[in-house]
Amino acid sequence: MRPRFRNKAQSNIYFLSKRKVTGERREKILKNIKFISIASIVLIGGYFLSN
Image 1 (tube, rainbow, N blue to C red):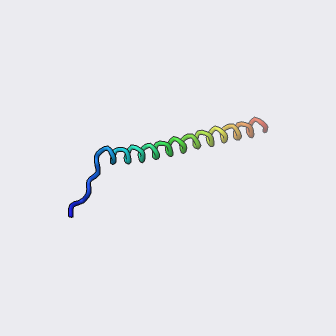
Image 2: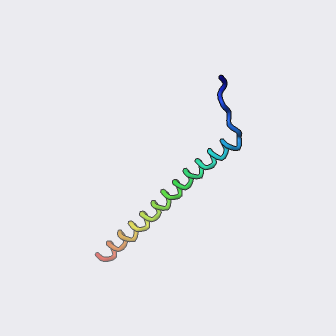
Image 3: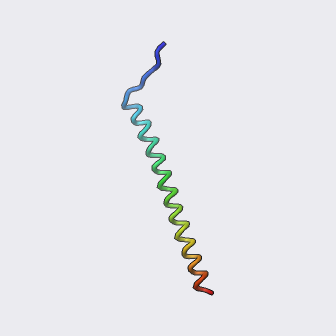
């Protein structure tokens, strides 16, 4: 028995979609980090201005 080999097009679609999903996840994490950092800067700035 010999192993099955897929066409290059099928494997490329799989790896491209997998790469797209990891890229979207990275963008979402960066967006969340930006939001949290801006919100914390605003809250800390407000705290110092109120004192």
